[in-house]
Amino acid sequence: MTEYLQSTFLGPEIGWLVATLALILLIALPLMLAVAMIIYVDRKIIAAVALRRGPNVVGPFGLLQSFADGLKVFLQETIIPSGANKGLFLLAPIITFTVALLAWAVIPFSEEMVLANINIGVLYILAISSLGVYGVVISGWASNSKYPFFSAMRAAAQMISYEVSIGFILISVVLFAGTFNLNEIIKAQEGHIFGFVNAYGVNPLLFPMAVMFLISSMAETARAPFDLTEAESELVAGYQTEYSSMSFALFWLGEYANILLMCALNVILFWGGWLPPVDWEPLYAVPGIIWLFLKMFMIFFIFSWAWATVPRYRYDQLMRLGWKVFLPISIFWVFLVSGYVMIDKFGWPL
Image (cartoon, rainbow, N blue to C red):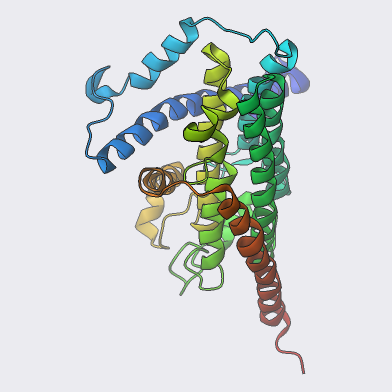
């Protein structure tokens, strides 16, 4: 698309700008639709686990429930507490929503379908994901209220704790693949096990990292059973307590966009991304984006399943898991994987 628009009357610079904006919209708009539908799927899965029907009134099978909820919050009044810092109070949900969208720039939906196929895609994801805590912390502080402030402090500690472990897990994958480019990491998984299975996750050396990354993803997105930032029995609604209308909706959109991002990263780093599950020629006839979405749905199902069945952790348990379990194991695994890679490349030392 970029080359075509640059060759038209628009010229190289304007053509590149128009093509980039078109690609951004091509990712952002379907992502917003996906967020609306994934909220519906989330509620359906949780209802099924609890032997309920879930959304079933608005639209066929309740498919339009998320759109009805969106219309409801859009028509509500935006209430700003009198003691709040108005500028920061309104800025916080915008930061959360914007940062959630930025990370999708480097996600490869297929071999050719990626907005920015940069060589430092893993570092970009790590940098962008670390910015997400700012929206939560600013919202808690700007609300000038006790419970949102407690929630913001919890969120800051929780996200930092699990980002450290996620960083070391990513180093293990990068060492094994030999690249920071997400597309190249996916290609490195082709025929990885017995020349047949397209996934790092079934490798005995990387399977523990796949499990830890999945659990850390739940903690990083404050998803149950690690939703201590929104523990309704303790903090009402956490950092969102004082928010209403579209400012509240932006938090939800950002939260679910982050959950989808973590599902995509789980699939890309450990389960073959847009590759079919096995290296069998007929399966390559299915577009890569279909395989990616199917695998993402399976990871999201695990997220929802955990929410519906696993009780919430205490805060000390959450911190202990991050610092005393995941961090030492992930550091040890970096040494283990680097040793394996060196032996595989240069052979046993004499």
